[in-house]
Image (cartoon, rainbow, N blue to C red):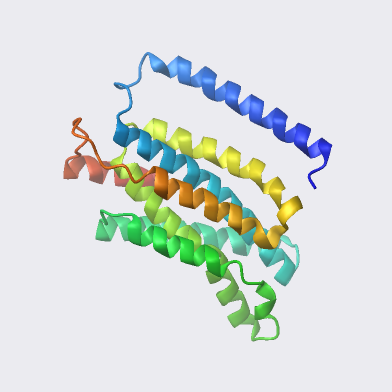
Amino acid sequence: MIPDLNLRGMATMGVLSLVLIFWFSRRTAATARPPQSGQQWSVTLRMFFLGAGFMLVETKAVVNMALLFGSTWIVNSIVFSAVLVMILLANVFVLLRRPKSVAPFYIGLLAALALNLLPLDLFLGINRQVQIGLSCLLVSLPIFFAGVVFAISFAQSTQPNTALGANIAGAILGGLSEYTSMVLGFQYLMLVGIGFYGLSWILGMRRRSQEGLQHSPADQGEQFRVEVAA
């Protein structure tokens, strides 16, 4: 169960987040670009659920590695380093290959998330270096595919500030959803993450409309550079 104290905390954070989102969206409305088109809405929704899914994947990675190696700062450093390396590799891959479709990477993402349903005690009893390498690869592999989807989606956005804001708002939802581990257990917290990433794929499948959303190669290159810098 989720204790009442935690539910009250979740409600407080949720309400504060909604108030801040509403407040800043009103402040930026006067300087915003024209209203979002169907394509931009699909990108915004995709970025929102990508943020939610990332928070759950990152939390699951930290918990699993702590159960395998112990809860120490060294373990946390290894996990966060692996996550950052995967994000870097995803951005470099997008810069070099310039993929257009997110479908293959969503398939790889969902497959990697399904693999993370396996218990990490499978790695017990093997060589220490191999144990660290394989476990880090397993828990951080979804980040690579999610990072590629993020970069492609960001390049397709005509309102980058809205896309990044939606991603952060989704991360808040993902953080609140971590409390479902009290009901499901951390082993199956990844099911919630799979649900978020599945929604990001389904809701972001709308095709570009004919509303002037086509980007020139120069514009896309600039957006990719902004993403790498971020």
